[in-house]
Image (cartoon, rainbow, N blue to C red):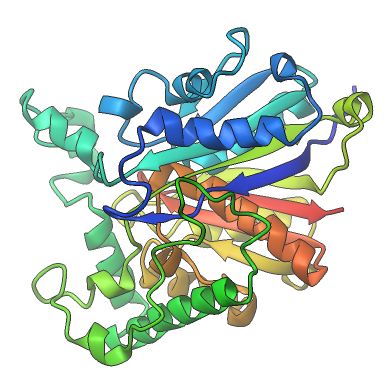
Length: 385
């Protein structure tokens, strides 16, 4: 049996709302339901004929608990018969949602799947699920495990320690990371001013543009910030911003293209995920992208645009140093330092932006990768059609 192709027909997102900003009041089911309703409403597939909804989300407690993919679909008033499932691969959750959707299509098991993600970080801050465990007597997810402690000891498992470790290993100074962060804001501001995001953003609750970029920031302002940890080169300026957002993509088979008269915008050319040291945590995109290229048969010169999640400046800078990929084609419209990192929605946001950037520039292949808790990294390569 020949493996089928999976195609992206549509991709959209809300603006990224800053903490306590224009989207902060929205329930997670309503925010996720907003992009689902928009996606269904602007395509020709009858709402009852979607095979599944796969959504990424992290810290699934409170309004995000109880399978937010299903809750969002129902909150949008969509048919009861369509199922939904929520994925947690930490920061890569909605990129993995796209992978699962594509795998279902490629296997022949399903024809029409929505993949995406939602996160409301104003209401449910990062690490809320881990902190909730403390009331039940668990200091963190790891220290109670004999197997974990036998292997990794009591070393801190923290994205902040990992980002600082990367900065030290790759000799990235605070000043260099601040210069990178400033560039992210400048690129995002330019993209907004020139209207590059207009085709991918659906205005929500009166919010039309991403709220997180700071076009008036400067190196002097960044230099005035206190470090996140004593003796660290990390500050809030070189870290991704918390945000509220949702994004969704429509992934279908060739049969569905013909059945519903759809036009494919991209083919999913490669999907993979790889693990690395969980204490370094954020380095996995480096080996993962190298392996992805080897498996796909593509070369770096074949890749026209890269979107790598800017969890911290040190993550993207180390990746650039190790791969040698052109910086001008990496996050050309800014990254999470400027555009925010709404955890469970970021993967779908990145893929939505990647697709639109390929269409804007006429590029053929785009690559997306993200660092993820546990020392993981997803890689997706899409081919614009």
